[in-house]
Length: 289
Image (tube, rainbow, N blue to C red; front, side, top):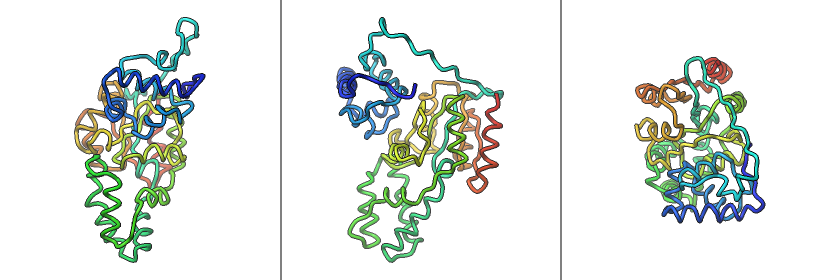
């Protein structure tokens, strides 16, 4: 089951908003506890998403202390239960897989530096240096995207900048890994775990830049307010997965990020986006069952 269907999506949104308020949580607090983006929760509550993922509704139900049936207005005594999907465990003990985003599922966002530099008439090096100076703060939710855009525009002499637009226009999906994610989702519980700016992940899923599969957990650094390789983001990811460290696999292109996970007892696999076919084969080999 990919989504929760109700007779009226607005009723689901109202039920979720009521459950959140009953639990004494703001939208932001619920987003943090359920590992959702703010934009996704806001759209669900106002009825703009007709069939939200069952995993999303389940995460909201768990965070608010209710059930999917109650939120969806389903009479569990009258409606047959959908059988639980049987997930596999790999030979090495892995049962949950986290995929990084940049450098694993998409590539070449660095081209955005060149595109923005050309529009501003400055050097790409200057844009890149400015970007990295503030990137961690935005990814940790300490600085808003709007503030970041203002800083970019002010320093490179443009009246306005939308980094999101430059980023989205200059990343390419890695087809081998999109297929791999779909295969993994059929066999394992999976999630995304990314150092990324607020709101980007949901847009990338909605536009197909990321595989459109039912993720069991989405660990967005801007919501967790910690970035890899900080321990807090791995702790949040382990809690969301609900399994022991030795059952987790992180696929990432950053060796520092992988070493941090390995120290916590996770399985890790380094991804080389210059050889995606070879890396994808190693992922499948690591997940043999």
